[in-house]
Structure formats: C-alpha cells, structure tokens
Length: 306
Image (cartoon, rainbow, N blue to C red):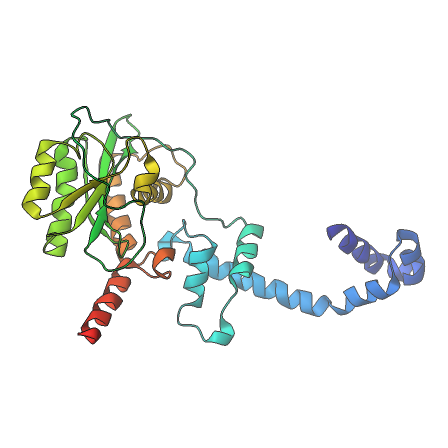
C-alpha cells in the first residue's frame, strides 16, 4: 500500500547518508523488498506515462468542443477507445475505470429528480402490452414515451415529450413546448410517424398521465394505427426506459446547473443532443453502438435473410 511505498521511497532518498541496511532495519522493511521495488521503477514509470497518455485521450473524448461527450463514463469511453483498434492495442475497461477515477473524469450525474406526471381522473385505462420487457430487437414495433420538464433561469419551464423505439433505442420522435397540454405528446408521436413513414400496428407505452389518457390522444393513436399500452398507476418502473432517457437528457445538458439560461438556448441544446443521441451516442443495450447504426445493421440483416 501507500505506507509501504513511502517507506521504500524514504530509504531511496536517504540511503547515501545512512545506508540501505540500517534504514531498512530502523523502519522495519526487508532489504530484498526494497531492491525489488527499486528494480521495478522503470516499469512503473512506463505505466505512469501510458496512463498519462490515456488520460489525454479520455479528455478529448469527453470534450464537447471536439465532438466529445462529458456524460460518458467508463463503459462508453472504453468502447470509443477500442473502436477500429487492432486487438493487441485495445484497452481494458477496468484500466479505463481506474484511470478515470484517479483523475476525476467520471461522467456527469444527475442528482435531482422531479416527477411531471399529472394523474388521470377520467378512469380511462389501457392494458399493459410491454410488461416491463424493455429488451431490444426489431425496430418500429414498440415505443415508449414520457414528459419531463426543463427549467429556465427566469423560473419558468419548458417541457419535453419523447417517443423512443424499444427495439433500437432510437429517439424516433420528440417535441418541446412551454406547456404540458395534449398537443405536446401528440406532436412527439406525429414526428415519429413522419420519421418512420408509418406506425400501423406499433405499440406505444406510457404512464397514466392525463395527456396520454385523453380522448384526443386516443383518437390520434387510432388514426395512426397505434395500440396504446400503460403500466400500473404510480409505478415508474413500468416506464423505466423513458424515465432513463429523461434523466440522461437533463444530466448531460444541464451538467449539474440549476437551469438553462433561456428558452432558445434550451431548444438548441436539446436539438443537438437528440441528433447526437441517435447518430453517435453509444448505448450499452445495443452493443455500445448508436441507434442509427443498430437500425442500419438490422435492416441489412433482414435484407440478407430475404
């Protein structure tokens, strides 16, 4: 441990004045251990230099100014480091985690969580067609969505509604507004419909918020051929994937700040984040690749099978 290393270093620093034998006796260490530690110094220096080089590469991958992502933790950083790298040059995820821990390079974490679901009073209910099965698979079959708030410095909020493809983790549709009326979630679903070309036969899963149980939203789902699904009342675990995206959005954009400076800044930040989320952000559930890359591979597999 550090205490033993300090003793070795003490002997090294004072051996010319007192001699190795006497110093080792006084501070109670074996001379053989000291000489073994001394012989390993070149290897330690080489490892330290390699770690320093690795730290520099990690800082680049976390630097937004260079196209990086400050929210990336050890698993995604490891995937970035090992992309298109020969097997012999790949870096171990445990080493990446250690280096990031030692140099305070951990990904950004969100500490505060706020619920925005307004309970439905209409009594309208839909069956749970997901059953907490958030596994990946074929795209364009199952979607989940939710609403979260984005605070502004003037004390007001913007609201973000999502429509996420369970199969590929792609953010297929989203919308933002200064309200939580039904139009917000309708707009997010319409964006997904435009993106996909059709939602006929797809399942959309949500909580029991009043906007999702409204007659207007149910009519839109029927028009688009979407089957509505809802989990148990008051259970966030039944819509865990959408909750996770909300947390990632605020964690990665606010970076610990209390609020966005203003609405235009928030809109621009969310637009850039959503684009990166689909095109570049790695998702562990789909093999640490981006949703667009996953869907491209899935499409190629279906074409080959045909």
